[in-house]
Amino acid sequence: MHSPLFMMFKMKKVLPRLLAAVFLGLSPRTLQAQFSAPGIEPASVDAIAEGLYSYRWGLYRSIFLITKNGVVVTDPISTDATKRMRSEIAKLTDQPVKYVIYSHDHWDHIMGGQIFKDEGAEFIAQENCLTNMTANPHPDIVLPDTTFSEKYALRLGEKGLDLFYFGPSDGDCNIVMIPRPANVLFNVDLLNPPSGRYMPFQPMLVDYRWATGIDVYKEIESLMAEEGIDSVLGGHLVMAPNGDGTFRELPLTGPASAMTERRELWEQAMKAVKDEIDKGTPAYLAAQRVDVTPFEDLRGYDEIKMRLLLDRIAAYYAVGH
Image 1 (tube, rainbow, N blue to C red):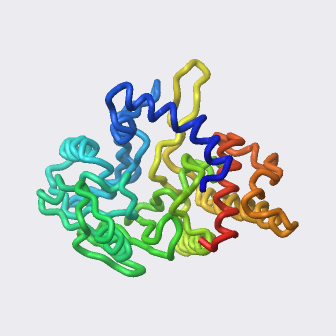
Image 2 (cartoon, rainbow, N blue to C red; image 1 turned 90 degrees about the vertical axis):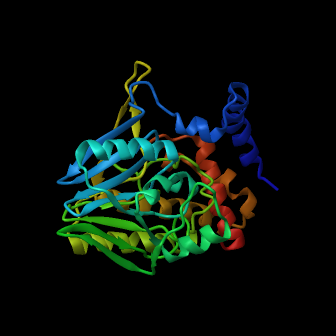
């Protein structure tokens, strides 16, 4: 049974978009793929470091690394996104795509890789991703050829990517990547820079693992400190209004401290809910009674979404996941 907060959110936020999809003859997936805010290009490529590029398709971001021995790309996003990405890569090099790396197993990031598979690319993912994809297959998702447990070092000559898995967080196979020799960490769905204090796009966080997620953030923070990583790149577009009906894209990267900000936000939210439950408030009522004023500084703050997030955390304390 859905909580009253959930149903209110559905009526206010979700139903109008679904009705628009019906009236326009478009599926929600198609609307997502065609997203373009006024002032924001539908797709873009940005240089991050020598041979390292950010590729954005609508709200989604991947990276690709060009070497003398081939190209490495991350999440394909969708078939249309992959076609555009391949054409952008061809403008920069005639090297083939040798490897595709999945950041995790969520369909909205990893569909459409068949184009690269047909080119001969090898697909790599954390081992839990293959288990999940096999149990819950999708026709537009290529299964990984190679899997790993905790670490994987991919090298093409002097360049490459190091892959790290620290446990369940956003799903149970989400990894972070360090392109070499660039001094940046790439993550998907754990942090969208430039800062860490912002509302999640989907406040219910249905696949987030609260029991282990905080420890994963701490491990990533330690990794960045050990490696001297001073900037973080995320897997989604972050934009801000210009005040004239158009939007601008915020900086692609943020400081390493943004990862700490994100962890501290989750800790703050979890503590607020736990403190309320410890007063004797039933978990299903906790989100409605928590004081949300300490969260009003969040980028994109919305009280309904905030209480939905708190409701999700309360559910964790009620059932354990």
